[in-house]
Length: 309
Image (tube, rainbow, N blue to C red; front, side):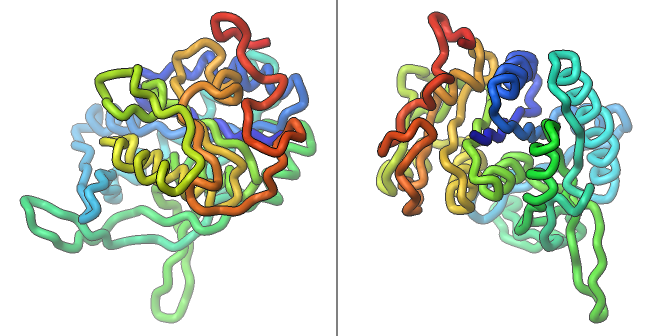
């Protein structure tokens, strides 16, 4: 079994319980890739430098970061530098042979640069140029598979390696990319189960009522309801889930990072689980335990109180 674990960058998300689960999974024979973001740390560093982070809204209503040159330099310093190194050290501390990679290393995450973005500002649509962002279209799955086969647990972060055409020549540069979508691309490329950890129990019909958790989505109609329920940052996570499943992921679960054994619990059915049928993808219905319908992955259901088995 291959699992991609997306660790969030929000202040409220403590990666410790997830890293313990990664150790448990790898010790029990699973291949695990950890993907992390770090927007909060980037914003904190920008503030310390006297710079203000800038977020813009697209015509589709999705809010995202505008990455100017200064912000890109901070990304390169904070994500593959401090945060990735800290996560690798923390995983080594719990017995996981982790190895840190950015999307630039080994051309792991590649695609075109998107230097201009359409935004809505004060009710007016316009083009904003100078964005140091890209769109991931390819994952070096061979590199990840080789590392996994050699007993390593890759810890992946952006930036990606973006390409752009100018005067008939192709050049490459580091570019920002959304970490949720990076995790989705990796999960799709590895035919993996994606567990996206966040600071809420999953996708809620009512954001103020945890009892309205949407537990599973398996049909296009259900996915439309999921999209309608998603608000704010969850909109991008649902978008990433669709991309993961369309790319080949076995399942996507959005779950709470602060829960007991959060990754194991998610694989056992806790959170919001989205299946390929939700985006109209026909896949081999046989799951890891040999059954013909989706069920929590055998051997990884949480014990009483949510503890790891």
